[in-house]
Amino acid sequence: MASASTCSHCGKQREGLKKCSVCKKAAYCGAECQKAAWKKHKKTCPPPPSRDDVIGKINASRATKDWAGVLKWEGRLEELLQGQPDAACDAILSVFAEAHSMASTPMGNACNAGMQSTGTEHALCAITLNERRVDLLGKMGRFR
Image 1 (cartoon, helix red, strand yellow):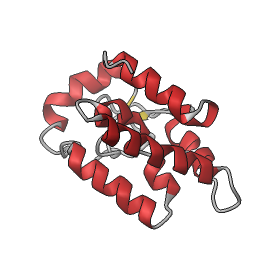
Image 2 (spheres, one colour):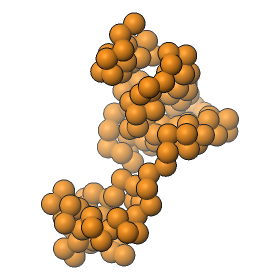
Image 3 (cartoon, helix red, strand yellow):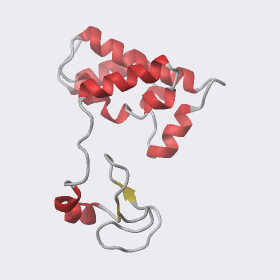
Image 4 (cartoon, one colour):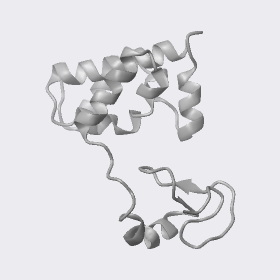
């Protein structure tokens, strides 16, 4: 397997290569190299964890107050809420809201760690739990 600074497809040495979002081992110059390498890479790349596995990992992270462990799954938040009853959606969103709340305390700085590792902003940091719930449920065609 190529190092993080060498494209797994074309072999070019570069800074800032994008890693496979699933295995985090293969790195690519961009979408073109990733698509070209997929037929070979998919044989060794494990499938992403199921929704139930992710919920289990989130709950385990919450139980140990590993807020970064909760926040790393935020990219799958909409998928986690899809098809769930209102109470389940509220419970999932509450865990993420708690993680964001605790991340900004001296107990940990998971938000900043998450932003550095993913390069994205954590949406719940800026808006309330209810606004986030309404926004996500609205995108899924479930208005309340």
